Image (cartoon, rainbow, N blue to C red; front, top):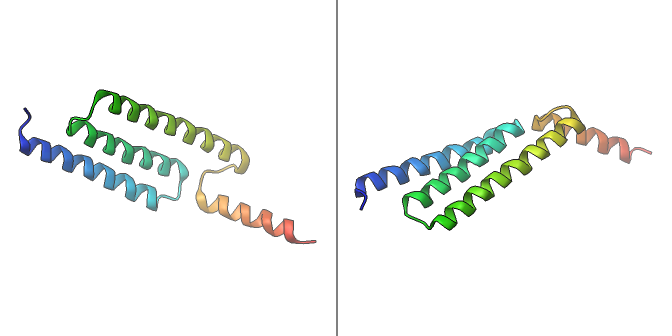
Length: 106
């Protein structure tokens, strides 16, 4: 059996990783940084599962979901880069607003 103090420390570390990832996803304007922060948040949640002794099947499924999420996110980033020439959120929003303004003008 693991020492309870070590378990609490690992859960606290995992919670800190989730908080850092959440804050990064909330504050970042670069979409690649947001994706990285979201993956960090999910890894922190997976660490909690490891610490509390979840089943290996749950941990494997969680790891696969995180990997799949990252792959889809990278594919979307590549597509955004090709379509807009940037992955900065403000520039993408400005390009969309400009395109919508041109569509509504007769």
